[in-house]
Length: 432
Image (tube, rainbow, N blue to C red; front, side):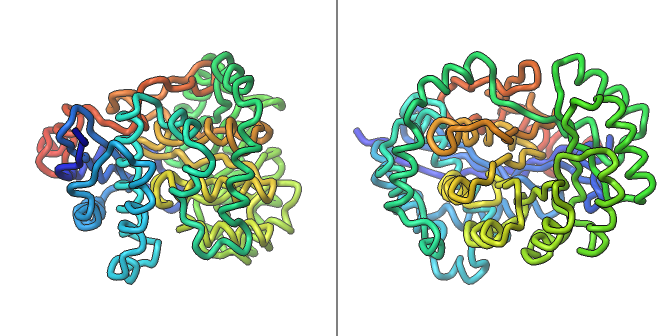
């Protein structure tokens, strides 16, 4: 008997992280990490779970959009999602009414990401595999059929993607054995939030160093003299061999960014992240040319594959930071990973949000096993917040992600966590 999707349930889940300044940066001083959470119910013994990450107000808008966008899924069979996925992708992203609200950006695209990721989670659970393994089990032709190459075929055609995936997975068994032994390299952001005082940063960095971390990111974009003081302070804590990244979270104008980075280069930064507006491709390109050899990293707010195509072609990003919940789920993320590989740009995905670490570990592992075949310049972001809210949270060992083994996309939240932090009626919010 074919298992079918019978219904969609959503929840507006918010965590009061603003109380401790966790997640704070130059543009977002008081975020409440939040999840527009979706569950796909079936008439079998598996469910699919996904979410869109937000930082508080507006999470209810995305949750409502998920309800609207997921309506066509009722009655969809899940026994043959290799055949169904291309139809689901078109239904969720190519509906003319929904496209008019984007197209392929904003609230509706966040909703599409949540629903598509839930479908992939359901598919992986139905197959009894972690998501990265499900992707690897599909033939290149099957996987490419699940992707959308509209408006990027001048750079990457489906046929070329098939060839890249076929060639990329050669020798994957040896690379998997390496990951299982050593893990996937990571860097930590949660020691360097902008709202943390020096004593907090010092304590967190010391604890992180003791746990094996060697790569750190610091939020900048406040007063430049204070940014420099904090950056040199952190460089002194981690030593000359530690890798230090800076993140301005879009706060600077282009000339201001170039001037600021010329000062901050005294701390020997590996990259500067989002130095200006995330939509300004030419601005990022100008900054990248002016500040080399410091790298420009960006992508967490880049809307879709077409924008990434332009960033990469313009030389405006040396590090691609695709976001698993802003692009249209696994489908669009894989297209961007392929585009980045074609341009020789490493993908270090954005994971600074609730659930994002759980998501991107699967995508980065698949990238290493079947697309890039390299760990050179590649790291997954890690924030030490809210993993306890998930049924299958990420596992970290000595500054590296442990390969996940449980079936699914690691996206299912604990039922008691959803009940406690559901906004506004959950116990955590009623108490406030």
